[in-house]
Length: 202
Ligand SMILES: CSC[C@@H](O)[C@@H](O)C(=O)COP(=O)(O)O
Ligand SMILES: [Zn+2]
Image (cartoon, rainbow, N blue to C red):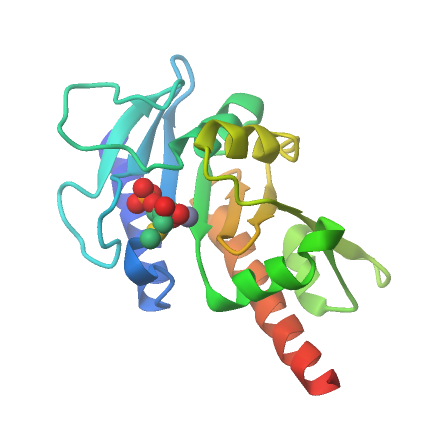
């Protein structure tokens, strides 16, 4: 199971790396391995996530601490992943920093959310109606991770979702790696589209 989940997460990591979504060691990824007890593989902190090594991920428990002896440190933002796995049935969490998701988070930051409408791509989130709207909450980028995780957890209610952290990045989650990656790509498409549209409108 663990090897299979490792391979799945490694493949997602490879694809996101090919998109250049891990600039300056940013980004963290995780995948659930077991439910009882809760364990998940998470990226080791501070690494260049474009590189593929045998030390890319480590197993952590429900508290986000390593589940077995290792010198590796779990991602600094593991607590956000912990909130998702503890509150939902999600199976995979992806966090990336991109210029476009940062711009959108700053532009709509004071409103506390960005609402995407009139866009075919919101169907990726299961919204099929013609007048559907997809809302992504935006939270402040608290430096104190437990404070950030608490603000983040206020928006974690379903097995799938997305939250923007202002001038930091986006975290998305889904029932499995396929769904989480689909949401992340759709989210980035929408951010890129809105940034270009805002520029053209000015
Ligand atoms: C220069 S990346 C900034 C980090 O603090 C963080 O936001 C991030 O995404 C990566 O941290 P990590 O601990 O490697 O998971
Ligand atoms: Zn980050």
